[in-house]
Length: 141
Image 1 (spheres, rainbow, N blue to C red):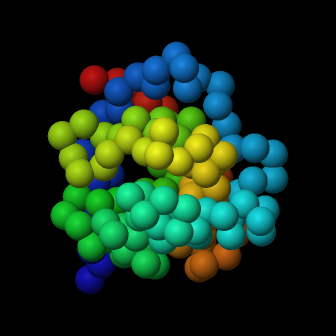
Image 2: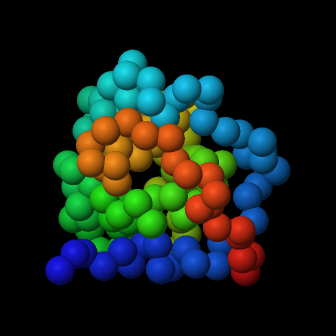
Image 3: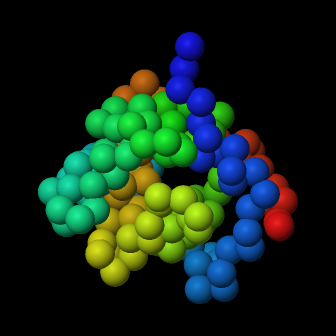
């Protein structure tokens, strides 16, 4: 039996993406770029900034270690939200959860990199372009 994805359940009703993030998308080819993914692994494991260690809550291989952390191994959860929404949540965090906003501690480029790395967990450890047709239409609170 898999780990329940409490984080995704809490995000069913999305909040509107702030204007400053509208129009932001993964750079062309980023989902499968080996250099970007390698940089993402460095960010994820805390090698870029010791205070930003995604694996502390999300686990070394995407299996959550902290209550409420999203399970990165489940494609249905990972492909549920657009790249813009995902970026926004890493940048600004998720209120009333342990997920802090990391923009300022890591760069925008590092956020894209860690997203590309995290995306691999739900694709058998291989780079993959998310299926945009599965991105849910936001249901705003």
